[in-house]
Length: 179
Ligand SMILES: CC(C)(COP(=O)(O)OP(=O)(O)OC[C@H]1O[C@@H](n2cnc3c(N)ncnc32)[C@H](O)[C@@H]1OP(=O)(O)O)[C@@H](O)C(=O)NCCC(=O)NCCS
Image 1 (cartoon, rainbow, N blue to C red):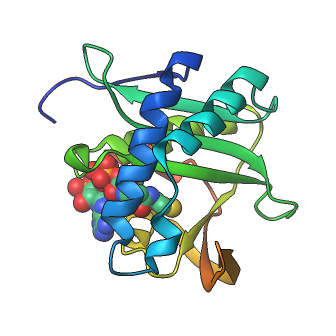
Image 2: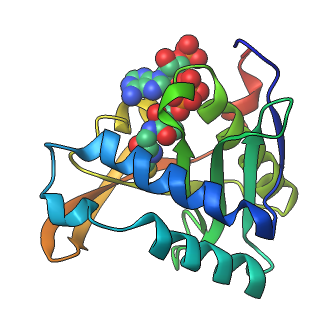
Image 3: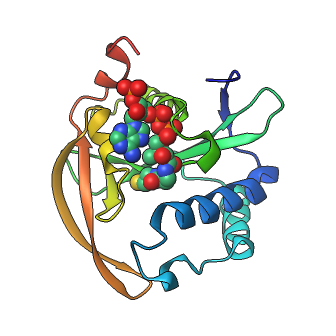
């Protein structure tokens, strides 16, 4: 890690950065792997969506936290806590994004662990995350101790594909190892 990274709740003014990171990171991750129409989503549209989400407020169970540099530049973020409708994995890691230049510096792990600790304090022990099947970053979740627990169909803007489901049965494993 080249500089200290802190984590704080997202604020309304963060909407442009959340949108830019979402659109640019998705393009970098999926270009050549999925049809281009899936990646057409504009930064402006995404910004409007994030602005609305932040303005309306998240559900009481959800958290949206950003990882920031010392000068408050947003490097990545996690949206977590959405309800799954499953008894075995009641809550979800909804979105996890680290800006491409900041990947592989420990920020993704830090965001997941931070979110999991908050959910654990709410009494949550198991969470799941869905990963589009072509996303090579599914190995990140395996590396962090999640296991492949199933899959379901995914309609990504008309591209019929598959979402792999990964679950942590005991999220304390995220902070009980030495890292
Ligand atoms: C997936 C993502 C969140 C990982 O974040 P990151 O900050 O790059 O990951 P970290 O540096 O915290 O990595 C933590 C560990 O996982 C490993 N890891 C990270 N990405 C990996 C990958 N794609 N495959 C295998 N291992 C990976 C790291 O080597 C590291 O191992 P270590 O702690 O033993 O040294 C980030 O690459 C990203 O935002 N990608 C694009 C968006 C995306 O795919 N999001 C997830 C969609 S569900």
